[in-house]
Length: 326
Image (tube, rainbow, N blue to C red; front, side):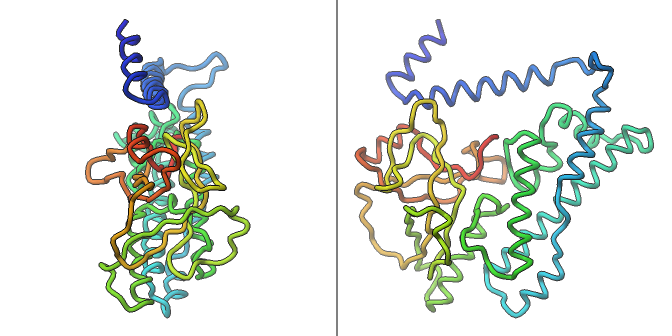
């Protein structure tokens, strides 16, 4: 009865996609709780929890990339200390530190399971999380994520690969995967600083202008004069009409939809008309409130609201996400 009344409220006041999102979140919490309560015993095939974690630890160690050569990159960029190159060096330091933590904790965990070292509370937590397919909190200090361990590992490899290529060539990518940055706000500030220096104006006099591309990424072959191309963003609570470049209703059961590459263009601040535009909040991940000391909100992106007024998308809870939960 309570569920029926709750659903009736959602029907009358909010969109069904929000109801689906609520149910999905509730189911994930329920399944996660059930998984954590399962007995830690050997399976019918005789493989214990420790045996599975040992195999998983070996697999993760094999998959994660090598550290990026920070000193070599610093020397390569010594003659070009642009704001974006400074951000690159900072990101390399953070990812190298994360990779070191992952390797050290996995090697110590293997030794602990084999009885070669004492299992600390941190190692026990790593053991439990890996057995449940979760990311250990020890590894989540570099950036927040709700991905399960398998997806998180693949995502980490892609993140490091972006910066490794940039560090190897010394040339910034034509299209940035902003989701791969541990601190995207620092990256966006560096883009503003670069534009301000190039045009000899104050960075405080700049504001963002957003243009969603109608081209495929393969047809974007050069960097823009000012600003950057950004890919890998997802719309939650709406769809996107690529040809006309405006928001549309999402298809049934489509909670998120990819949005084409966006040109983040710094322009001199001026009074602009917001008629027919929806100021879409962009979040680092699905937890919009963020965590203690680490807000999830990154930037507000102006998108054409299409045939509906901006208030329509506010009621839908429409937002951009940089990272998904899977």
